[in-house]
Image 1: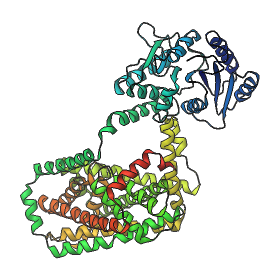
Image 2: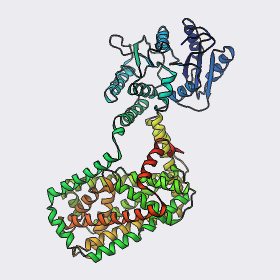
Image 3: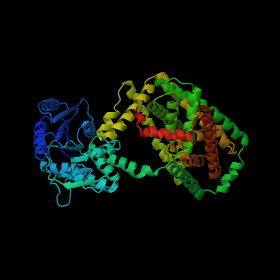
Image 4: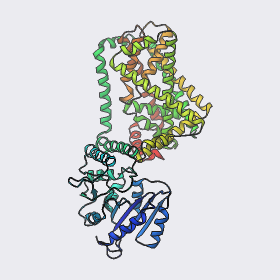
Length: 603
């Protein structure tokens, strides 16, 4: 590459945010340094001004009008450091793309080495380093210690060979930028690190060389908020690079099945499987058949509830179609771990009815909140009854005296239930004042792109639930239908338990089943196995054995039969719905994953 013939081969980008006191001097120093080793028509200096609220835009505009080597890119809103750099690089003329911090903390004597490392074609990416052995920068402890810790974390977790990832003194070729641009997801402080890590993983030639560096002024990095945010980005990038490529559909299904088998194996430590099977064989098939019919009849109510939720979001669909969509998504959750069926429902309503992907996810999330709130409420109602009759001690004994798996399941259920109640109360109360403080709360912890993404998802979700919670009539309809849905679920379990000839009076039977079914479903919220198999059975068995004279074998047999019956009805309805709507479950899972990766969930 050469700088002759009027071609600008080098583009230097200066990311600027509120730099009115220094930006003019920085540009002048940059121009004079570049002039020392490049022809004046061989480079350009771009001020990537990132939503400043001081005089930086005015100064940058004036300098650009006075010198054709200077360009000014203005943004009305904050793009983030990485976002501003990406925008400038995409519009830059040069094949060598350079950027450094506007405070000129890195000695400009190193600029020629930085540029020539790429311009010569020897390297694809080059970065200055403050932590090369024997050339460590003299940094104040409040900045040096976090920097060393962060770089050690990146080297260890992300397997990087570099010593310093955040030094604001880097260059890369146009080809390297185009290769990495779509891969790098962060748009704030972690952008530098992700660029370097992905460059190494892509096999690009990366040069790290020591620089003289002197801190100037106060860092714009919030040492609590931004470092915490970058820590979350390290985890995110590790997952994407090291874990996600190994998670195929086959490994996911196998892992889920192994978890189920492990749960069943643990149960055999406490129970003889032959006794459980014998108890199940003695069950009254007529009552089991009635339970199956009752459970099947409850599904249109799920479609009715989903219709009400979508109506509040501005979409009007028929109950029949929505019942089928719910059937298909729940079947997906049984077949695939990690609740992959949830994405299937969003895919179905988008592909068949044009409901935006984001709205499909938001409506489903709102439905989940009502489920959790209803389950927590039902369990709480039973606890109040036991307390009023002086039998709360039996509940405590039941939880503490069960198996370890049962105790863990009950504790998980309690935590999920309390979280659901707190979340819904907060959302409903905030709906009355039309406020949504999610972004404020999230950005106090992290202001990077990951934090922004989490904030946008939560903000949309909270806003949608607020729309339901802010309308008393809609909230009442959805809440009432949720109570009826789960009451029918409990009645199914009661019929199955009665089929085992347990001899309980009706009040005791219903009270125990209300509590056991609520706790069991709260326990299986964690997507540890397909359909929560194992978690539900553990919690149900622990509750029934602890609160009744029923033996462990009969209680587990009833739990397995109850859960199995419900899953069979779900699969039958799911298969029928897939045939009726011409939906392939595997195709839906694959395409929903592709849509999420493409960012359509944010449309």
